[in-house]
Image (cartoon, rainbow, N blue to C red; front, top):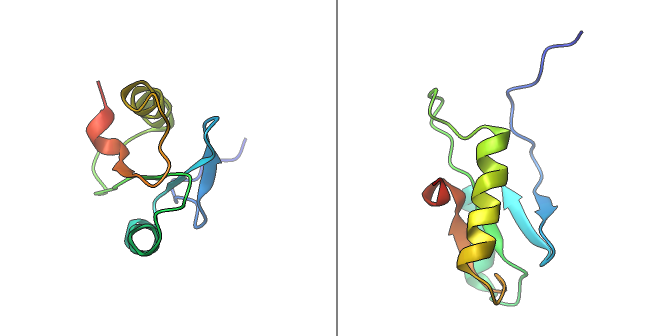
Length: 86
């Protein structure tokens, strides 16, 4: 059995019914999102190489929390998922 990769994907992943993107590439996508507000929403994940970094289950729960917090969708929003872990 192959070991699971701990390296984040280099490209963003589209999630949620709104078409928002989740990415570890925070600097580039935040900059792009600030240039244009007609994007479907950008969800950022910050990693510090600590045991407290978000795991897949944490990310899924945070996405659900974001969708509950933004019932009208995330269009034009840039949100750090790390702040939605509850």
